[in-house]
Length: 310
Image 1 (tube, rainbow, N blue to C red):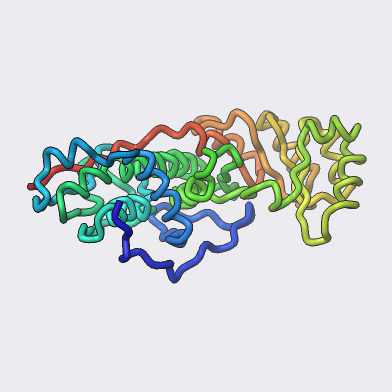
Image 2 (cartoon, rainbow, N blue to C red; image 1 turned 90 degrees about the horizontal axis):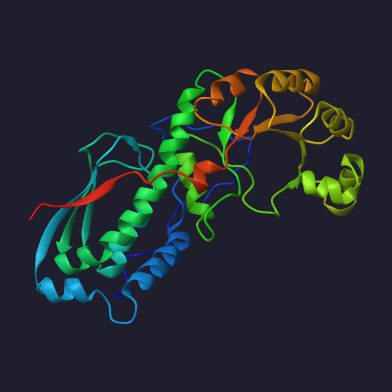
């Protein structure tokens, strides 16, 4: 595989994200991830495909000097994400490949819409095709389902956030795709913030003891959220001065009561069995955040193709 001398560290760096960050509107620009973060992911994917002998099919069929033009084209409605990874896949295989980008991440796509025009050595384009489309289709799928729920709750104050239910090794780019779709990010890892869940509470013997142990262990700058599934637990958590409460698997009516009890003393996050159909009622209950794991772990791939132009 050719070393891509055209790749250099990006001048823009990933910003700091939190659950309180505002959700981007559809079509809003999304801050790109630095290429020094993306390149190892793309290299690993290309190496997985190339194996020991490279692309034996394309090398046999496409003459070494053959030149081609192809287009990355949307075949369904959706929101674009992952274009930088697709571009890297082509450029890492052959720096001679040139890419003319028509739309950028965060753009709304329609069937037949050209995302980018690619020209250069045919062998390299064929070799990079599947890796580029795998990243682009998966991340655009994440962005698309996120955007669908963001649109479903338009007009409510609640923000849609993802979780740690991500593909191992792809968390940063999947969370990026959520932002491209207009959502926001929850914590990135176990070291971002404290989230006391039901098993933590069970091990500690109760909410109060779990929070006491946390407060004795972490620094004063660390935010603390606690998961509650009953209003009695909510009262207990609020009395301890937690920063956020995760209201787990509550009905809209229960959520409305929980929001009233909280009275702005903590961030309220609803979670559990959220769909595009149920999200509007959950948002109308007045919660600050709605967290959804399937945005990243079960989003369907958006159909994007690489079409031969000659």
